[in-house]
Image 1 (cartoon, protein in one colour):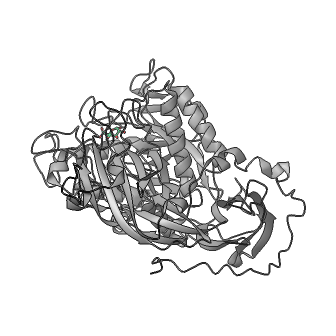
Image 2 (spheres, helix red, strand yellow):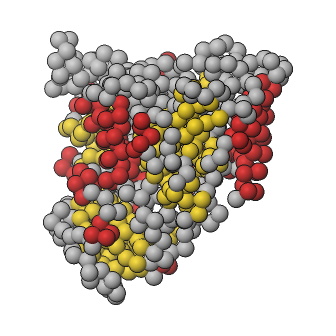
Image 3 (spheres, helix red, strand yellow):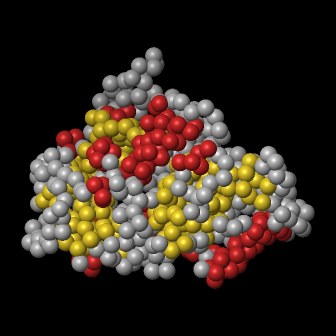
Length: 627
Ligand code: GCU
């Protein structure tokens, strides 16, 4: 039985390319220096083995029911003396003869659905932080002319993967995709894959021990086998050059021999058809004049972009727009834009748990658009690819963020390498999405030793992988040392950012709701300023008067005061209330009000809009009129 391929096979027919060779001036391995400054660093490109755009490839889904074994002591991996076992659970053995002594049997064990966190699937796993073994049987008919990769959308937090008892690879980081080549591990007929997922929080982790969200564990996003040609298009980057609306630049990366091939880039509706030659690393830079209709929230125009090599072909819809800053303005396609945003955690509406479906994405973005948003901050970690692609289709701008959250081990080299790896993975996955306009390095990091150097390393990597998008971090302001009723924005991290973003909770933390329109903000940087968090908590439907904390009236009063303060601020480029929907957090234990939820949502976790939703909706209606 041929492997069920759920995407049409690549045609692979060689296109007779009538390329108008606009690239004659381009050396095969580089570009005129004028363009070079906007082109990513080839070393960083070649560092990644991530396969992008899995939706348009020949894939075989492994989603569904997986057998599981809960293993808090990891005794399936270590023996009684804590030595790593050679006969661990990854062998998927079972007792067949009467004398067999295996102390586990996947096929007689419980099951969990993949994708999905384990906390919301089994009551006994609600608070579980530890290891769980997953096993999935599948049949495969190897094709000697093809290669096969095992791809995970995400596993929180650490994943060790075996195929047919042989190690495939290991990945750390709970919110980014990864893949391992398994061509030589697959058998003809029956196969099995085993994953050891471990969601324990770690001091050296990214994020570390303390966070204000629920530590949902498990294989939280889809798993699939990707069948490719021996030599295939693994990765590519096709965007407008920074600040240019008439120059498309990028690169194409081939994985597999022969590395040196002709690559054709076709964007039929933009009149683009060019060729380039990949080098001995399989990499070719591209640059071509073109004037595509620009992607914009009011008109999210996208083009079918095709890449064809001698052995492979892939396509996807890509939008073209420029995003840059000028003084205190953010410019989209050269024009100032005010970002009418909302923060979103990856919490599934209604059912709760890790959001990971297209429907979850649509509901969250529907609410955002209903509020009048043209922008979402996908807080505090990379979200699933569905919401990025849905935002791209709808014309909603996106702030994507790395979980460098609160306090990390800034001087731990492993922690930095982990953060850099997660950053590289998310940039590789989403770098062709016009909607993604900002990469955020971190959130609310106290000024402790090593923090700036750590973040500086992430900024440098970001700019080397993606020269066109903006970089920020969610920082904190401080009470002005001289001026009364003033707040000073002077975190040294602002030096390396394109956009200054500040989380502020005046009127919520450190004193209740009160008029704030006398407050002044002093931005030390001649850069755009976004208020990346503000707001407060309320129990949806609880009316108990304006003096009663957590009531709807209390928070409505607070929001009105906050928005009046924003109206006084000149040069504000965006506002992002915290947060769209109530979400689970173990730090929120006030009975009958919070019950394990952070209640700063503008919408309850059951989809009921609070009064503050409509206050924001009115505010954004006014802001939209001014544009
Ligand atoms: C912080 C933090 C959020 C947190 C929020 C809150 O600013 O960035 O992750 O949930 O405030 O206190 O609710």
